[in-house]
Amino acid sequence: MSEVSAVEATLVEIFASAQGEGPEVGRSTVFVRFGGCDLRCRWCDSPGTWRPTSRCRIETAPGSGEFVERANPIALDELADIAVRLAPRPATWISLTGGEPLLQPDAVAALAAMLAARDRRVYLETHGLHAEALLLRHILTTDGQDAVDLGAFQLGASLGAIFRLF
Image (cartoon, rainbow, N blue to C red; front, top):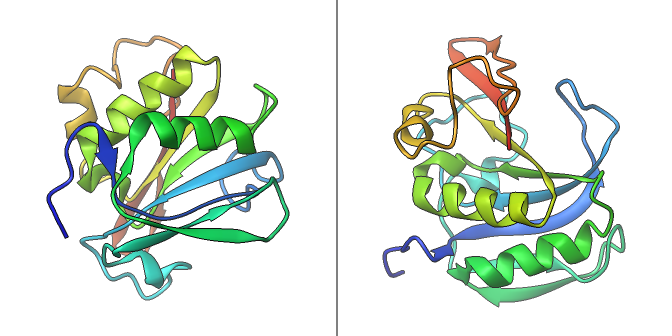
């Protein structure tokens, strides 16, 4: 698999469902599941995301449960189009999750900016160990602005965090 640039991302799947955890539980959400994780938590609900894959699944219509397979990596502009198609209403959250999305920080930063420019609500679900990667890209701020909601929670020995982007 080739190295991923800032204009593409390696994913496991993209699908629409309801948020099952955190402060937005029950809310309509599109999950953009990035491939690769540097932890191996026993309680992980998606161990199939721990290693990047050569292909990813993309849901064909919101909630249909029908998927097509695509080769990785995927161009970010196309990924943004797919996410918006699966989340036709701006009130639908788009969750950047994994694996660990911040192992691809340039892709996360660029995709979050693209989705925000389309008036989409973006959440980042991360174990929290690489949050400095977004601080360095000026996506997250720590100056009290409403752009970021830090909802850190402790899970065993691992720190988990959910960041509201833009």
